Image (tube, rainbow over the protein chains, first blue to last red):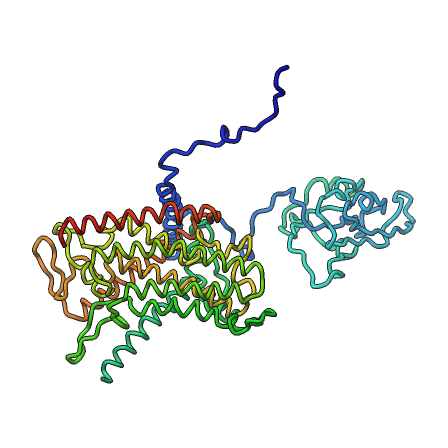
Length: 196
Length: 361
């Protein structure tokens, strides 16, 4: 009977055999030091050029100076939620509870109320989002059949000194504007199409 | 007599001020240099009246923070040792600077003053002793904290110091063989000549391997990356895990002082100390025969400046190494210390001794 073959991972075959110069370590250290030192002097030179007022397109650093300079956001970035308004200012939400049901973090609380308009099934009496629990998955936006909740405000700095402060209520959510609107750009076609 | 005391005080104040301010500056250099090496900007958010000055005020901000934090002392039967450990760490590091010459000598009103706190005729041994005793601060901190992690840090520190002290001692033997003196002032003076008529007779040309060994073991003495096993921030945090407030700050500061010390020692032993190439007491004497006469103050100023410049360059190099290399594993550390550095330093000593004997010095 042939000997049973066992799955053995041959580690030494995968590992690259080091050459003599790599094994004595010193030339590789010098190579590494050369790399970091080159970064140091090149960046220092660029910083110095900028400090004396010479404009160069070459940045001395790859970072953004955050509070003053912000990274550009992708249009599809999921940011703070907002509730979309109808032309009369009332929420577009019909309190169908789709978002509350789909939410994996259980952070949406809707209390529904009746409405006289026969074209609208219900309206939200209150609509709270607990941002302390929200995981920003965007499922609520996908689930909404009325396009009433969006995550396009561009607001990423969300914080509060208390847990209660992390809960946003309906008037707050309705008052938020999309990032495009804040920037004075024309609102996107989707919003115009459903205005009726 | 009062003149002698005044001269001693003056040199002491100069070297203490130089070392402490340079060590303080190194906290800023460390942040900024690492940032620029890694394509970042670095600390720049401590403005005074809107003036940022490339983050230089972070030194002050750090000091204010350190002094105003709670000084937590763990439940330990060794409160005194716990309190004295950071003092020891910083004290012995500072004491080593006493024998390092930062200039030749100046003459004021007929008195000549050596630009060195004390010209010990056993300076080399003094340096070696101070570097050995410096580990006591770390070991006592690890032991008296009543914490397993700090104890581990202390044990690692003592093991590492023992392994690398031998290399330092043996490279110093090589220097002793070349210069035939233990006085640091004499060693620096001996490096003033020329080799083959044009090359400054600096120690690195006599002891190139000794320089590499001393630098490696010296970095190990400073307990910074790649030899930061006693600290090991990502695994055991280290011997100062139970220290807070300025006591922790003193350990941190001792690291920077040791960095300056290693830079100063490498400068003194291997790069001519305060020697400027072709600069004699009377001025420049170039190997092609021309000379340029300079006054005593000019010459001594240039020499002190050269010493400071060399120390600064080595501080920069040590920072570069600290922010480039990863940490050794403990077995790699011991392997490097006992199986590579020790035989190499022994061979270096032997070869130096043979050559010195052969040249019949």
